[in-house]
Structure formats: C-alpha cells, structure tokens
Length: 324
Image (cartoon, rainbow, N blue to C red):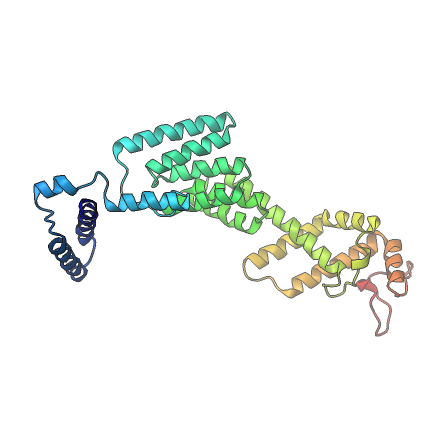
C-alpha cells in the first residue's frame, strides 16, 4: 500500500501545483478533488512526517514525461513544464560545445548525440535544436532537420537561423517554394544577412528553371494552346538541344521570371502560359525550320515555306503557321 500512497501523494502535489495556474472556479474543483484524495487515502500533505515518507525526488509531471520519452523513443514528444536547473543548463551547454567541436571535425553523428543529450537536460533551448538540424542536414536527413527547426521556432519564433537552416533543408529536398518562404522570413528577421539573400536568389532561380522546363514539357505534350502533341518525339536529340538553347535565352528567362512573379503575387493567369507557349513555338520555327518541318511532316501537317515572312501568316482558316 505504501507505493500506492506515494503515487496518490504525487497526484495531490501535482493538483496543488495546478491550482495556481487555473481560474478560480476551476481551482475550487481541484480543491474538492484534493480533499477527497486526502480523505480517502489518509494523507495529509501538510504533515512533515507524511511528506518525508511519501515525497519523491521528482514531481509527477517529470516522471510522466520521462516515461513517455522512453515509450516513443523521442524526448520531444512533449515539452516538460519543468525548468532545467542551473546545473542542468551548465551541463547541457557543455554538451552543446562538444557537439560544435564534432561538427568542425565532420563527425556529424557524434554531434547529433551531443545535442540530443543536451536537449534531454534542457529541451527549451532553441539553439540546441537548430544546431542538431545543421548536423542532420550534413547527413542528408533533411526531414529531421526541418522538424528540429520547427521545434526551435516553437520556442523562439524570431530565430532567423532556424528559418535559414530550414530553407537549406527544403532546397535539398527540391521544395523550392518552401525554401523561398523560409529565406524570406529569415531576411525579415535579419535583413543584412547576405547568405540568406544569396540562398533566396538561388532558390528563386531554381524555381524558375523548373517552371520553364515544366512549361516546355507541357507544350511538347500538347498541354499549351498553339502547341502540338509531341510526346512521341521527346527523345529526338536535336529537339532537346533546341529546347535547352531556348531555355537559356535571356528573353525567355525574363518571360518566365515575370510569370513566376505574377503567380507568386496571385496575378498569374492562363494567358501568361499561353504567351510562353506561343513564344516557344516562334523560337522553334526561327532556330531550326528544317526540324520543325520534319516534325510537322511526322504529324501529318504541311511543311512551312521558308520563303514566307514568318510575321505574315498565310490567309485562310487553317492558319497554324505559328503553332507548328
């Protein structure tokens, strides 16, 4: 029965601690529960002998958190309400410094272990999470890095480095939209950080390149107005070489940049995509009319006349000169 009374004593202590954090009406309800437990088990928490007999070294919430951590194999399943003692914080800081040394020596797994041990002592320190995120990124564990950055931001929403490192992880996962959002938030908090600015520009460029490639592939598959269904000829080396050349054209890059900017501001529309498709068609005609005629023949369309003015389409309802 002694062990049960220790548990009941811990429950009463927990309820007593909770009273100070509740509204008056809720606190009164807890007081009733406390009195019932004291009466049922014959425990008087104000008696020194009872306290000496039943009080444990750790409070009930800490015991619960420790067990929950073991069961889930993660010390981060819940944030303890218990504040780390000065001794625990000092020990945790030492572990963090060891982790930093391991990072410099490219011993990333050892660094992760140090940061993890530091977090077990003080899991309210955003720096420990952010440092561990950096170590996870070095081991290409990018989702773990993102989760740690999110934990750091839960503790400190103004931690720019957490946003920056989360952007790096998203970039590695080729989620450039999320990376851009992270870098922008990092720059809002630290406007003078050139590294964030450089990473933002790289992520925006990557997104533009992907959009350009996607737009070209849509056109090849017949997804853009004015473009034929060319899915069957995507393996044509000459075709792909011409596509790469067009994608490197400054005019095309500018068009893509403007379109992406408009879409990011909620203003992008179908006309922009259609314009890009038509521009692709025109450039294809100008750069390699022989290849275009070859493709038209494969699709059962008459070849274009090289002597015609490309800016003046022939008369008639079947005008598809600029639609290849």
